[in-house]
Image (cartoon, rainbow, N blue to C red; front, side, top):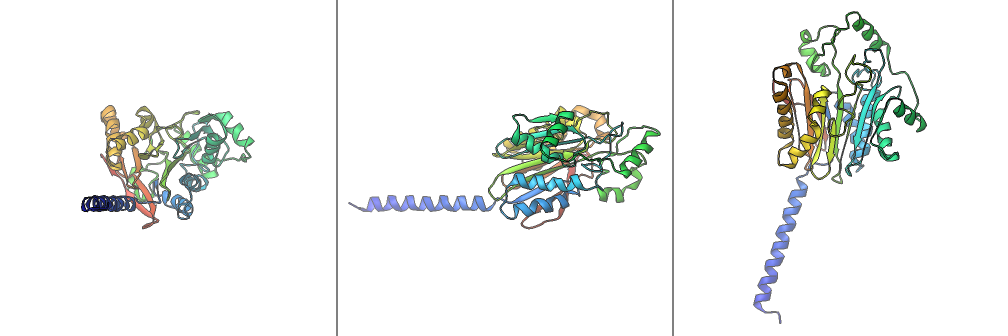
Length: 338
């Protein structure tokens, strides 16, 4: 019998269901997706290609691969891919890593003569039981997969390298990758002193899945065989689809020593915002390096599952690019310690 008590109970349950439904709707509508973020000013062009995929409900993995390929192919970008500055022996070697929302990952280290190491890294992830291939083995695999071998040392980078050999003085300058910084502070960019840098990209697609990519030609005039953080999963890049993702830029040795990107994601798991997590990771490096940190640049960029993003660096001048439904070419200045 449908009495008054049952009517009240049913009404209460219905009201609770409606309230829960509204709460879920509000929570979901607050997620900023799709969105893609990338390190440095040159991330704008890379984000544009990534957005072509994300805006059509494509997946984050395809987006980040295609996005960073823009930087890899840009001959004017001497810190990533084709045209990148060589090592001390005049050899261009490339590092890259990629990671999807399922925790699958692939990387290549010290790869020569292949313009798009990020695509090789993806095939390492998808077609081998391994995570990393290095050196001659990475090149052999790339050629077997149909990649074309080509000379990556451009006339400009070769000319600069020969000029550097006259003194062989190794004194990197922070933020040389930031075009606006170069224009604002040319006195801080003396001749024959070059830094390297990385494009790290993180994307959250319309399906709520994360992916990341990181690729670089490494530190200019490094020792032959040197590998930084970019191809090291957990250092230069890390994705956890339950929490968020992070990538890094700057002096890779310090990022590796602190497993930086993994640290940032774990801090977000503890409740830190993306910017707070990046700041804490930077502060740990500063605490360990003390006074020598003044001569280092390391920056972290992070995104969480809500599409919130943030960055923090040791030195002033670190920038990143943002592309979502509201803005396609935003450049944001990351906060810094110094």
